[in-house]
Image (tube, rainbow, N blue to C red):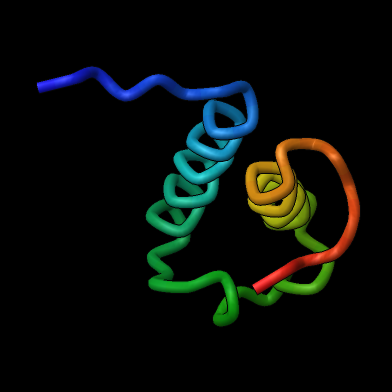
Amino acid sequence: MAEEVLDQWQIALRLKTEELQKCQQEHQLQSCSKCEKFLECELRDAYVKAVYDSMNKGTGGGFEF
């Protein structure tokens, strides 16, 4: 089985995903949307940025589907 090679954006996304999931577990939540800090959460904002960066590899621009 070939080992997956991750770029810096995928690594950052994995780290932010783990942080976000840990927070959800600590607060016994299935989703951030149920959290009272949903709109002002710095951790969630950092996760969303990591998702965006992993999609565009740091080049900026808009989402293309």
